[in-house]
Length: 561
Image 1 (tube, one colour):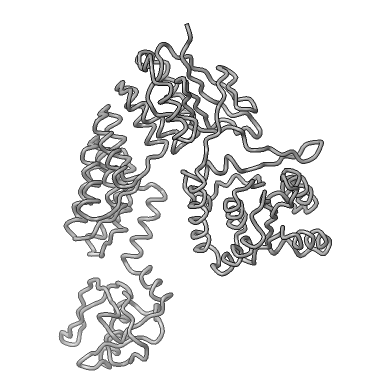
Image 2 (cartoon, rainbow, N blue to C red; image 1 turned 60 degrees about the horizontal axis):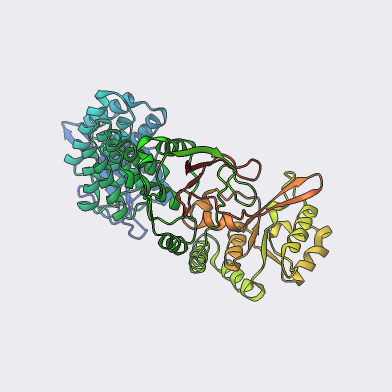
């Protein structure tokens, strides 16, 4: 068949295309057909890469055909008359040697099979299979995840091969190499890689990029170098999370860097709020250590401290350690009014700037318009301007499912009536329901009453009603009645700065008791690290939620003599 095809070819082949993908043909025949005049293109130019496949250069030696196999990239830019459909193009790329290798490396990564990945890599080099940054990243990741000295060595060799092949690295490449450097116990190299990523390659490092260097310096007790990494993160707009702040706190405690311990506690207050058990234990260790006893001002300007508390919105002053002497450190709870059951200190509710709320509502609107059908959400905002603001917003679907998996409209109706009683004006709350929940004829009278009162908004087909009830509550600056924990990917988009504070002060939850539905109002104090005007500290943990079980706090105050 191949010989017959070659005899039919023009002596001067021109660029052509196959009108339909012919994956049942061998790669050589496919290549041959592509470069003949037998098939003419009838489709416009497309510059996307089609595929990579082996083809043979044929020579006629006394009637026999001699071929030499190598790999080539075929593009529509190289062959102006060649075009494949998007689906065919993806299939061709997937079935190319490079595509098959990428798939196999992915399997190795999933199975954590570094040895097999390295074998595949050697075979690919021997067969001259083209490699791209994705291939190298998978190989480097596997090497970084291994404890073997050989894998560590091979990781650096593969990175050098990548550099010599002029393959451009990306953020994942540098991050993985930083992990390899950390495994080599060389945090300085890990930090240099991050700086190279930013300063030479113009790639913005992510938080994960800094962790190998930061962790490496902290493990070695090199506090100043750890602070240098932290400073570089701040300069580049990367916000440390609890794990990173915990590393910095530990190296500060171990190094007796009292000012840095104070700084890290306040950074935990502003960005983490409730701390994990590991962080809580570390904080307890600090307050119990000898150095903590001797740190703090004996006399201070009371007026200055009060002024700082007011300026910060309450709950902290940031002036520095106050008082001296041994600390009493205990685990405790707050009563319903926010009074510590151990020391009697009353916690405060930290203010939220109204301007901050308005800015967040604007950002939420922009995000919702990107995620939802823009026209639908803009129509909702117009409706809200006409009928709002409200004293409360009800997440209809959530409250109708409190007791069971079945949608219980009567339960929702009861919750709406109870919420109405919370309103100073006894106005109905805004009920948000999806279009699929308003079709029952049995519920029509109540739904019609809510509609006529301007208290019902039905979200359109295909929408996510979370965007609607959340925006309504934030823009109205009112209570939000829902048991939704608001922890999924949608709420993760909202960040950890403003939203947790707003949620804490505005979310009303319900539970079912023998007497009926019971409201759980927002606490009259903020569940956040608080520093009193007298120098005592209260640190909330993630243990407990004040809904089913009382939240656990670390109470640290000076022992009075």
